[in-house]
Length: 386
Ligand SMILES: C[S@@+](CC[C@H](N)C(=O)[O-])C[C@H]1O[C@@H](n2cnc3c(N)ncnc32)[C@H](O)[C@@H]1O
Image (cartoon, rainbow, N blue to C red):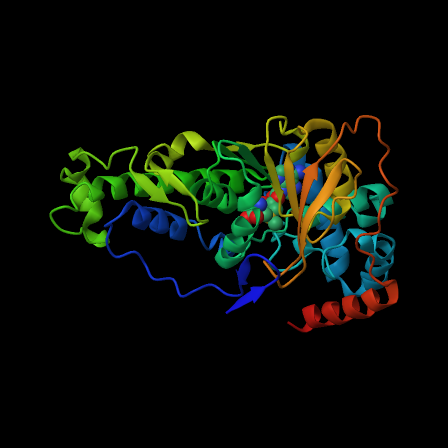
């Protein structure tokens, strides 16, 4: 099914994934590569370390103090009272990290005698903890949503530009964009080390698949090569055959045409950096992508950074929350349930914004405290009996 919101028509669900059975055309290789980067949202989140060092040491300490108060029915009122002033910074009802699926470590031997108490955590620190907790939540667009997104931005993308994903997770958007669109470079910037490492592993597998696919194509004049046999085929010498000519045409999923180089040289067009996005160099980006659904409290700071650092004409897209800054002109707004489950905004950096004041902070997300408390108490009660 498709939804027409003007141009183009958008998909509303993933088509059934038909694994690529044989590589007969470069487009088959491209499709197998796109299939290989799906599904990262289901990854198993590793627990942080009880003795976490560096940036996340204090995060773990405060998180454990908050979780102890949450889990203890006798301290529930205190937990609720501490949370109430900060609801604008909580994604959902209860912070992700203190729940069973959260990344905080278990205190199997009980709390250390000198463990931090929630009473000793100030409001400013608790608020920052909640911002960090929300921003580390993981999610990815589904494949059809990304396809819709790429179709929507394709008319604005200049071939040879550079895209950067701020908060790139396992790298799905970066790798998909490099495959689907004619970017010269796609960069992912991710704060969490394990996610950065997973993105790099996924990239290595993607590049290997591309090489095997291109090698197998060389043998196709004789007969299509079944995908299952390809690992052995490559090992036995298929890879020594000449791959398709680099200048042979390759149809991109977004409608444009590239050449086979698009796949052959993919490794030079993708990179992942383990870094705080606020430190990232965006000065030569032509598209900044931000899956900002859990970044509500960060939007003003992100807008200010981008206004200072991106070039005029640079595209910026974000999800769920707008970028409220006069340096950015809204080109398109795709409401929730059109190209994706949530809203998507596409902006262009205009003018010379230096010195422009930020508009007052918008209350992007402001739950009613009483409604929140009722839901929080219900979730706490469900936790107690589970
Ligand atoms: C919702 S996920 C989106 C992942 C990816 N962009 C995608 O759309 O598939 C947001 C990612 O941003 C990362 N993140 C949060 N704060 C960050 C920061 N300050 N710098 C870099 N990455 C950050 C999180 O760890 C998480 O992996």
